[in-house]
Length: 199
Image 1 (cartoon, rainbow, N blue to C red):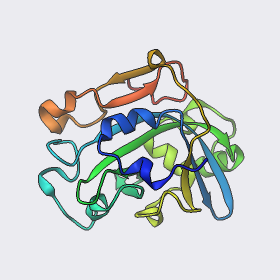
Image 2 (spheres, rainbow, N blue to C red):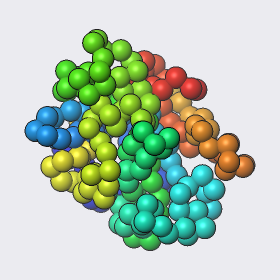
Image 3 (cartoon, rainbow, N blue to C red):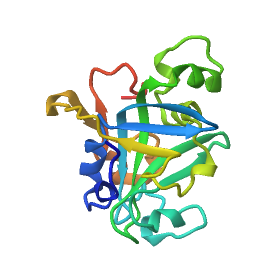
Image 4 (tube, rainbow, N blue to C red):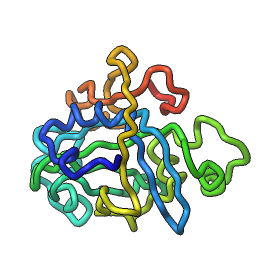
């Protein structure tokens, strides 16, 4: 079942980041269906989170989509080469987002390997937000895409993850955020080999 708009517009981005574990994300790019189960996420809160692009109500051409109602994609470029896929949550003007960091591949694995230039399937195929986007064909063209549409969407397949199977810890690569860098807003499936390596 495709996740409805109402899933994304709820107010607690940290809870949502945790609930997204076990959900499935799919893309249909150039007629190719690819996707898999989300196994790692990070929460970013528009209000009072120095790690968030929208901190202090910052509005730029890049962050404008963060102020939309939840249920759209926020895709941005890092290091001039990696696109990162974020899910905008909450009501309009709240600017909350969940970064999807890793998935366990399910469909379109051959296409993912082609996009990554890899010969065989290994955990680093989709373990990490940059390589995940390459594998799924996510780039700036999906900035602002409706997550209930037919190009990129999420599904609930009734996977139930017991609380003890989920790990929490600080987010990755945000040392500039001071004390906020220590917030335990990163979630991952403990036993998954598809989680990005940095714990």
